[in-house]
Length: 510
Image (cartoon, rainbow, N blue to C red; front, side, top):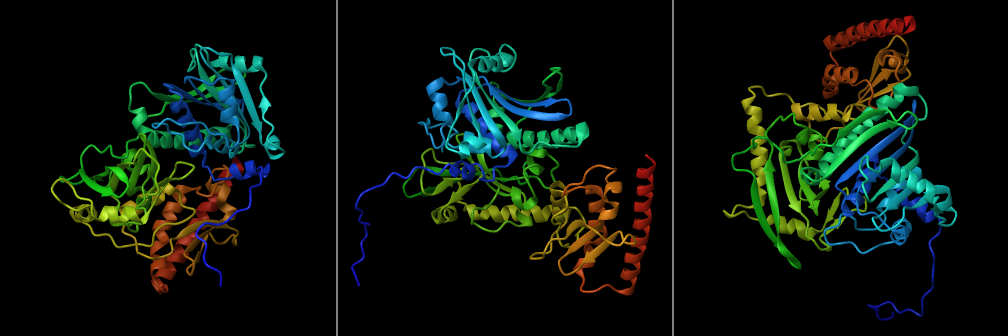
């Protein structure tokens, strides 16, 4: 047996250029739409922008392009080439939001067939580059945008908003998420849903910037032919610690800990939200289990909203507990930011540091978790009613509905959630129960009538599905149904089939 070599011996090196399919892999990293747009806004902030416009452009019933336009310092031709180079990186300032040099390309090409970047500075002419996904796959050929068109796009926003003397416009074409069919009704519904989610996401993750007087994000919708503006509103900050009254008189509290090799010390700002808050700052973050835990910031930008990072498992009794923490300014092995800037991986040493964190009075951070648990339980007692634990809601039920159910009802631990799905059934049935897998099956035959003729989606018919959950959840909490419950199930079946057929008749008469 040979001796172990701690250093691997080499005999030379070989240049291995990336395969063109590298771009395809880069663009398939699972960027959500809101996350991808937020990545572009990060670039605008790094460019010193004070005003950012997210512009949905439609041509009648059809959405055609998305632009993110800012009044930042812009780029000259050399800087734009670096920005558009796959794998190209520049030196980032210590307080920059950018890190990896891949966000513009991967965020854009994960959602669009083409990304065009037009930029101008106070001292240089307007320049533009375009990546087509099909060109990127075949050999990294980036298009040079016609200077006349580049200037015309800048002129479209010049002396209007937001560009004055300098700025950048990022244009997405062939956006995969845009509806392809369905007319103006589907387009309007898509815009309402998408813009609402986008506004909440940007309001949350960039809330510290939006709270300043000199930074604004506007979301607008405009017709490219008529220049009619359908929508124009400013994104509002959504502070996840913006409660009007604390949920515990002893909080917020500041805990301090240290870690070897990290300076200065780490500060943890522990908060307990008031119970049953209806504020977006509390409810819009996610489900009861998602929204509790650590909120990590990097250079004032939220990069993780909730999660305990292996400190413990989330549970309903900790739903009021949130901890704000600013990451150290320098990169290290303790905190590793994901490429999409939507999460932080922490080392085991972080958990050890949490266990020894104390406040100014010497109280341990671990006591905070007990205090948050107590605040939740005391609120339940004061309500005067102890609600029976239920099996939680699962797939097919809208996330905001699931969140409310989990907020209002204690959950039976370690049980498979109850899902509600549409499938083909006998027309004499409105629903069917799969007790073993905890599934309520609704009859596909009645779906469009219930939806009023609208197209369905995974989480559609939230009112009907919520009522079915409330009606049937207790059935899954028993091993079998007695004669009274069987009679009730038959009664509900008959009435719901009759109501659904009535809905079908109404749709047929329209």
